[in-house]
Length: 212
Image 1: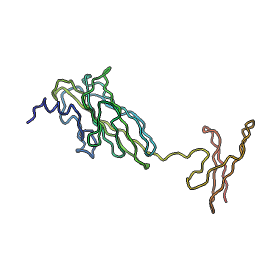
Image 2: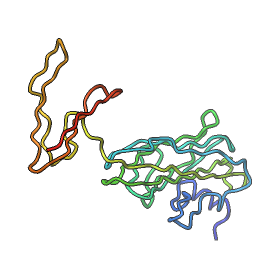
Image 3: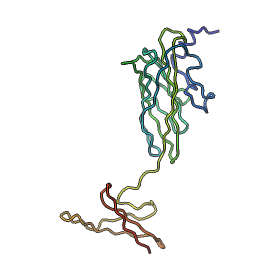
Image 4: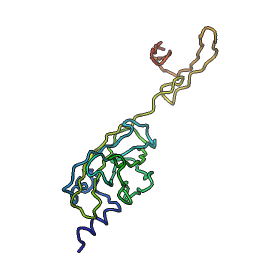
């Protein structure tokens, strides 16, 4: 049988299944074992709209609490996580700490990377942070959880290209540097109708449309 001190030291090298993710371990997080301390504030900071297949950097912050040290567990509903911060590692696909990290100016901070799935959709990053008093026991600590919803959006159409990859690109036939006038040509697909060309500065886009 492990004593409380031994269990605390074992989890001091990280744990998975405690991120607060409802799909993992019934949504449990570090408060299952650690209690009695001042409750911290936790947050995941990073982009909330990303491109399919892109890799993005996030920061997890533990603010307040015991203001001595802290650890983390991060999971995600889709895509894949990378333990990009020295002192962290992947445990069953989740990012966790290899040792409690000391607080700097009352904040414990970790960074990690997430690669979005290859298709548009939605994902949620779940994270839990444990603020510890570093006395080798589970009492006098406190944990909190959070989540961040991320939208995986289709890449926007590049200016100067057709709106569908199967359509031919616009071609610049001539350009007058003095007047700014440009001549374009475009070969629509057979039987294509209802065409639109958008042009002008991004702050004031105009549209020219025709049928046939």
